[in-house]
Length: 89
Image 1 (cartoon, one colour):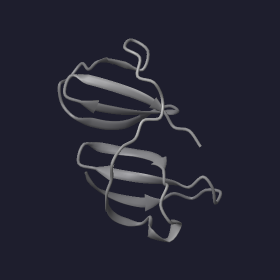
Image 2 (spheres, one colour; image 1 turned 120 degrees about the horizontal axis):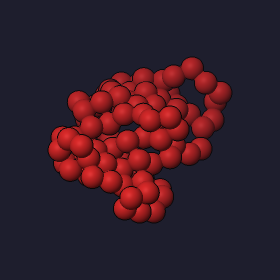
Image 3 (cartoon, helix red, strand yellow; image 1 turned 90 degrees about the vertical axis):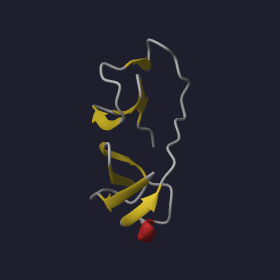
Image 4 (tube, one colour; image 1 turned 135 degrees about the vertical axis):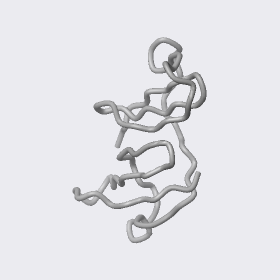
């Protein structure tokens, strides 16, 4: 997915950036080189927690893609399913 990335003010590590995607915006961890963060990038989303139906995965109220923050979680919606993943260091 092609997104626009911008650095957010913070402590040096772990580096977080604000991602602007066609389906929404969220602050996420940046794993690339700090000097290369700002700009447009093709990204692949990685979820590093188990997917558990009814816990962090559920039916979406709207069958449309989406990306947003919900407290300390990032919500990824694809079609009719939503996944809420914790943003970890």
